[in-house]
Length: 229
Image 1 (tube, one colour):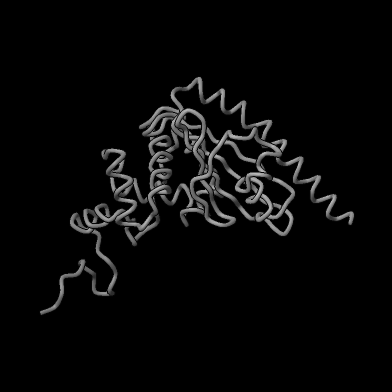
Image 2 (tube, rainbow, N blue to C red):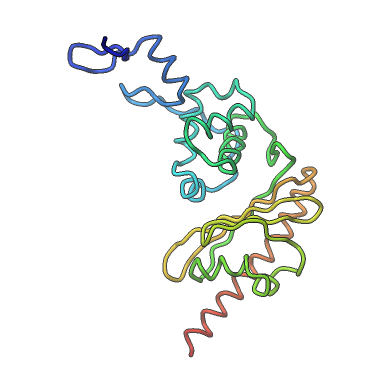
């Protein structure tokens, strides 16, 4: 007995039928015939940079938006979307949450800076240092204390030269994603989550900006001192 398969024409091409469309939408994948339809305009930017989301999840924002649009994600709950990403696309939990929040923002399903556990703010900085040195500047306590007030964060988990997470003040959480940009250039994107309200977003945005500037200055000075030896 031959297994069931989607209908094809005499040349072996997939025939687009109502059942075919339903199957494609169920699994969150676009149809393979014809050119892709244009994505609707974003109501708001998703938050995390294109570079960071592609490096961490393997796809761009538009690629994830198309997958979720084809799955009719605008009619689903946050939990359903995140679970679908984990099950159908093997996306790890933290990245599934980040993609879900970015999608909800872009489709107008969520207030700006709002996440399931509260509000969040992003901050990023490119520095003149290898990614290993930048990673150490955040994860090694003695190096972190040079640019960030001691005790501000408590380390949770880390993946060498790729990501790290921290407990922040008052029950907040901070995730750091690192990007290697060459032998002497790298960047870090911080996402500070579980903030209580929009006012806290602005408070922490103002907090992180000068400290990341200080970090960049210190790493640049270290690089010059090393080069001068």
